[in-house]
Amino acid sequence: MLLRLAWRNILFYKGRSLATFLLTFCAALLLIFYAALMQGSHRTMLHSNLGIYTGALQLQHQRYQEEGGSEHLIFGAAHWVDLLRRTPEVTAVSARLETVGIAASRLASGAVVLTGVDFSAEADLSALQKALKSGVYASEGLCLYVGSDLARKLEVGLHDELSFIGSAPDRGFVAERFEVCGIFKTGLYDFDLNYAFLNRAAFDTLFRTHDTASVIAVALDDPLHAEAIGARIAPLLEPHLRLYPWQELLEDLLQMLSLDKIFGYVSLGLFFLVIFFVVMIYSFINVSSRIKTFGMLRSIGMRQRQIDIVLLLETLILSLGALALAAPLGGFLAAWFELHPIIIEGIAENYKSYGIVSDAMPTCFDPASILRQSALILLLNLLSILYPIGYLRRFSPTEAMRHV
Amino acid sequence: MIRLCRVNKRFYPGEAREVHALRDIDLSIQEGEFAVITGPSGCGKTTLLNAIGLLDSISSGEIWLDERLISALGEHEKSDLRRDRMGFVFQAYNLVPVLSARENIALIMQLRGFKPQQIEARVAEVAQMLQIEHKLDALPARLSGGEQQRVAVARAVAAKPSVILADEPTANLDSHNAALLMRMMRRLNEEEGITVLFSSHDDDVINAAKRIIRLKDGALC
Image 1 (spheres, one colour):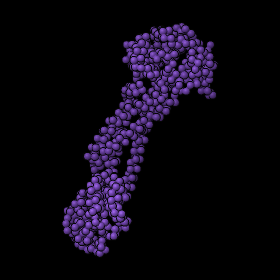
Image 2 (tube, one colour):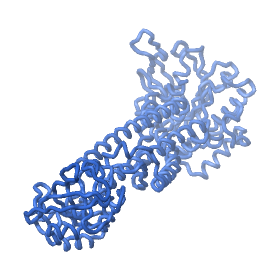
Image 3 (cartoon, helix red, strand yellow):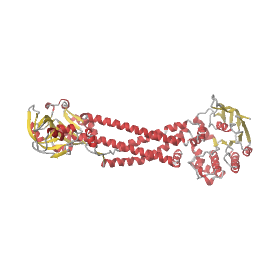
Image 4 (cartoon, helix red, strand yellow):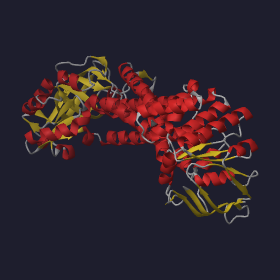
């Protein structure tokens, strides 16, 4: 009976019902899309940052991260690469060996991190291949793949010669002349300024580092599970080795994402507050205009609690109806813009320090998030009717019936 | 059946604008009575009816219904008592605008948990008695004033209350509809044994009552 009364009220006061319905529908749609966009931008930032070079996990000697040094390398790297490749969530693995030295052209010189990599493995794991600006990506022999800002600093172009002197893991020195065969630009200034890559065969010949790695980088299908997967693999490792999740390797990124999340939540909070007060004011007007009817219902014997239930049911029906439309539509928009990202010209240039390497801003279709946002809107709507209910309770039946 | 002992009602007590609306009312209404409360405007007719119907609290005194002190009940108990024992008819009809005449009549029976078949049969019965059976599916806005008031009476009597309290039920009706309504209420009183207590200052309506209770300045006279 209460449900029927609530339903009849909704149908009878069409204008008010439609306004509440549309308000809830628009709020839910906006919220779902905003959350999808925020989630999408975070995922893009994360994937961009991890995908450029770091990977989601890195296997290192547990003292290499803090101290570096040739005594803290991973020896017998092939075994660990094989172990990691057998892990189901792992999508790519690359063993790298880094050394620091001085590079010089005819005109300039500077410090460089020279890294021996398997270019084919890196193509699956990092953005090195995609970042090719000129020349070739994978080259054999004494050919270097140089960051664009490093090339500018050393004043070299394609096919120019670079001399390098640096330390080898056996504590000796290596000096060699290389040709610049490829130049890359990831957008990360520090990376593009300091890194140069050499194919592993040539690197191992020069530095005598066969089956050795300073870092084994690992890509996962979902980087957010890095810590859990790392913890699962950890017991299989030798005690001196440790798997570092990206959260430890890229603390700046983590802080930046946290900060962005906080701003996002503040915006959402303000959004919720606006929705709450708009719906509440509207509900208040809606209830105020019917005080006389509620007074009459109480006078003929309806309990105040039953009237409260009628009001809650009205809100519940309208909210569920609006959400039943808004959630699928919001989900569709989130899925559509995930596949066809919004292009914001210049965003990559402005936000390159955050790892944004593309002007495309995809959303993220996440059914759990859509359900969460819908539940929040429903909760807000139900909460927003509490004040009008409290206001209504102040009236005695006769006062309510006299209300104009 | 209904007994009032030294009932007083003050509005805005202790303030300069205090109104002593009911003064030491001692009154008994017996079962099956058809009584009218009358008196000049502002004499306290509506206040007295509202006090008996537990729609307003009283400042002092006691109200008894069948040896039960009802003026001291809590809000829930008062609501339940109004639902189970009383029927109300208001001057302004006060029908639920979103419900049809049939649903308005059935409302209190539904609140009391009558079975659908019982409700259907009783609605048909009272609708026939009040000659509104052809208007049962109409919303209140589609009914004339007389029809709305008959629906209000039907709603009040449908659940077979012990007493009907009607505040100026004919005030908004023309003389024809007023006379018709009074005949119908009298018939309900006689056929169903329902106690009827109503207020009016219309002589024709007052004359239809079996007992006249006169009020002046909040006191019986």
